[in-house]
Image (cartoon, rainbow, N blue to C red):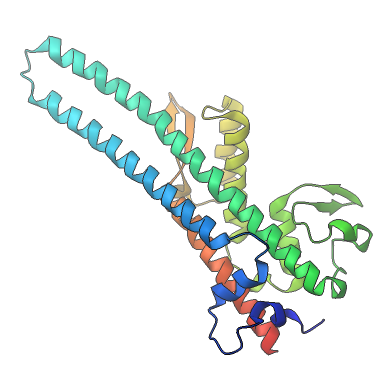
Length: 265
């Protein structure tokens, strides 16, 4: 394998001490500012979090106002109880909107990041690789993780493509151990939200709930509202959003370490 990996990753910075993150961003940069994109995503997520807190505070305030009413004040109590019910109902959908916004920013970011990464690897050292599952017959799409090859047929499975290419170039051991699980959960949720909106068909909700259990996704990655005994609306939890953001940082750090060791080696 060529030892050119570090030339692009560190070109022009020989006298500076690059962080692993900066090394990774320098390597994959292709007229796209992934650092600025991530900053914008975090800002939007923070604003949505603040809006959710304000809605929660308003609901709590309404509860307190109801509790201040005299027990015999049925007219006002009934009126405010109805208003509180509407607030709860509205919050279900506003939280779903915020969750869709989160997955709508995070999933494309991961996809564009890995597409750019493997494109850069392919342009730099592609001629020395290509002996694994991704057959040489498909060299024109070899470095595109959005495409997978099965029985000499092309299909699409981004997560499988990422894991295959990371394995073949020796990058996988530098990436988060739960990357496969994190991406599968994120993109499964993204697909359901974007194809079905906030309220999925009952069968789809049940399949997602079963998949979450069968693939052992952490139980606190997704929250849900229920309708009777059935799941109604799923949300990305704050913990899962935080995990996705941390995964991005870990991926960039891992890619930088990978590049540095290739260069030093």
